[in-house]
Image (cartoon, rainbow, N blue to C red):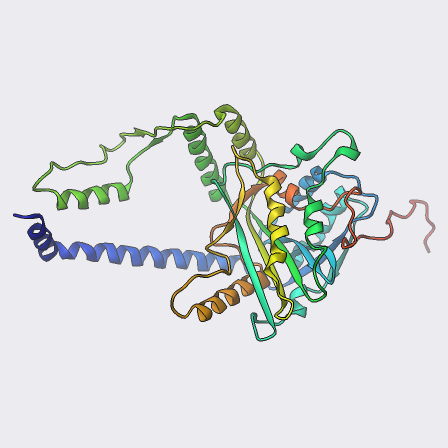
Length: 401
């Protein structure tokens, strides 16, 4: 029997094997969608507030202080917190969007570390924009950020940029503030860092994946055949059954060592991975949005903001990259303009509601504090909005009626 004849025989006699696969795929898709729906309903928060955080000119604290504040944010149980940097009207603003019930928590954690801050509730900047974009007057560009490697590998953090002397200390926010200096009057540039604490299940999964990553780095990783390995082997064996003896992925419990070829300093990488695993972490979505009137729309404005993330990249650990799947850029042969408009519209709505990405990053306290913190005194810029006065507590012996 020829190979072609055997394939025809197999399709004629065993076509029904495709049905369980299709039904199984449908079942798992429906199960996953229902699970996501229940999770979303549980996390639904109706009342939100947007807080503007203004740093005093005399602020001296390093991002270590923000790391301590973020540890308090890890206690939230509902919704998520969005740490935001907004460039508009030739000014840059630091905002925090939080469920209203956590407003006092956010304020107390920040004041505890930064007594010089001025925090006030403001309107959401999206309230000044159309409810749906793009339209005939405005256009937009957006993307989310992804990691070049898996979540276990850390990025370069603020400790790398610190120096004993203040005048030699580098604040990573300087390039971000500079990126907004050339914005025109009606242009808006937004950086959203949406965080929510990892659940216990996610934390267990994170540690398990990190252990596997460590083994891979050290060349000690092992894998055990799973259901898909057996299914693929089964289908292959049926196709070549008349010519070749069946080959199976291994007996139950049998493991296969993964060969590793890498020039990385294994022990140093493992040390960094384990240090990240020891910290509290957040499920994180980093989103970049640019909105402008069509007559001034210029996507090159995005380039300095994307360059901001380059300073956190390392060759032997992790790096940020643009997530092309979530980007508003689109290449299509049919109905390209229509598809692009729909993709931009969907992206804009997720930015308005601060939805999490379908594939979020995992960042620990130190990594988040590196990316987002009140700028120190050394950082200057005409676009930076600061508090002009310093607030302090009234004296304890102040007479009251």
